[in-house]
Length: 283
Image (cartoon, rainbow, N blue to C red; front, top):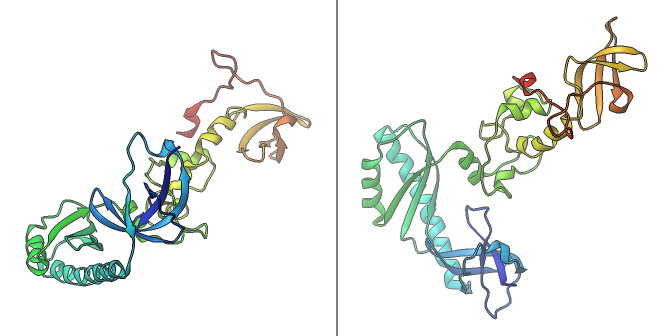
């Protein structure tokens, strides 16, 4: 097993793994490491990790050193440059009347590169803006256009569940989310109730989607006539998690019944092991 420690960097929620060598580090320790993007200043968030599957066949880079006073001062200078560059770039955007939303500036540890993150509805001609930034800071400038979901992940915030948004805590990648997932889970289709801070469908709609699809196979389809202790009725709703089916009798009376209280004739697939589920009901 490979000994490693998990490290997080500023403005990133992803955990990167490094070889600590013979030095023992604890959670919360600040370290300096060599990364693919140059020297990085990070924080230990997982100590003493032994997980070869995390390496994906790659050799771990070693931690350069524990951060000292000079490193903290350099890190502070980089943070101050980010604030100054943010204000200056916003001023330049106004002067050039560019249709772009600058929301974050990131400086490398050695201030050898400044990355400007922004969102925009389409492509932006920022060549003149880059020239102004280069003249001001005399360093490498990168303009990076990202989507609103990435903006929410970088900014963070509190979701409608009352917890910090998932993408800012643990999500490494964004999986596709569709309105179909909300329909499958009998959620309200009101956009204000199923959208996240980014304005897109909430990522958490994907978490239980597969479970709902599997469980629904054991339920009669909406509109199916079933036998109940009080006579025949027609299925109008499902509560997958509670194992409840809502039926409506000819007289208009509605009743919630457990799945084992009704009788119906499910159609089988060729394997005769799964209940047939007509996906056209969701369209």
